[in-house]
Amino acid sequence: MAKKLLEKAGLIQLPPAPQRSALPESAADSDAAKAKTAPGSMLQFMTAQSAAVKEAELLRDRLANFDGALPARWLDPATVRVSAWANRHADNWHDAAFAALKADIAAAGGNVQPIKVRPIKPGTAPAAAQGRGVGPSNPPAANTAVPAAAVSAAPARFEIVFGHRRHRACLELGLPVLALVEDMAEHQLFEQMERENRARADLSAWEQGTMYARALDQGLYPSNRQLAQAIGRDLGDVGKALSLARLPVAVVMAFASPLDLQYRWAKPLADAQQRDPDGLVARAHSLKAQASQRSAKQTFDALVAVAAPMR
Image (tube, rainbow, N blue to C red; front, side):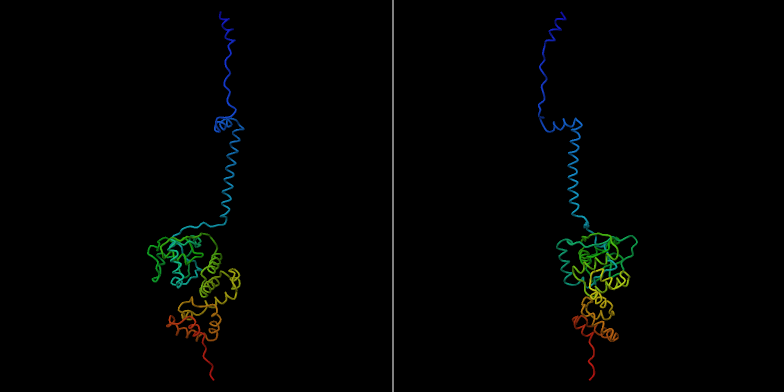
């Protein structure tokens, strides 16, 4: 009996198992199926790597556009001091051009065109020039409009390469100053400062000469010729500027402002000094009291005047 039942059971045919569709129900199912195999896992890895490589190449291309560029930073202007080669006379802070620059910076909320500074190395002595960053040991002059908030107790951390007028405007307005920061040697600072000034608000002949004289006196350049070559200026122009800077102090003070001295007056004034140094200084002293009442040309004419010969 049992044997017959077993034989009958063997004759029963079960329906075949349902076949999976050749097409996956979704891409996720397909990826999951492929990932279960070694080739599928490798394909997923290579796809991810390819995307990462493309993204890295795109970022590299973008970065190449900034190659060599310096990032601009907002600095407290009170932590920025002028260098030993500072070349702006104080009269620059009272003329119409500076007032217009200051008004533009105030309207924009800061200097749009950044200045350039270099970090001050620890232990570096303060600049021995026409001024420094405003601080407790270097308060603003009485005739300036530097707000009390700009006087910082923090020591100076940066030194101006170029942009003295923009820095001064931000300092007086109590605004942060936008600056490029780059470390550089002394001669690089001097040359960049000189070239940038010529490209912007040109220094007066006397300021230029004073800057050159300081560089020569302190041994930054061994000769007028090498200085002229380094900054790309005509040797004759360098000589005229130096001649004005080397004039006796009394002669310079005979003018309402040193900024009034002009290149074309260098030789006549030098000739007058060589011909009669004592007479030139005497005339300068007599003119000083009324310097503000004469034009610069009138002062120049009086200084180089020579008594008519006797007949």
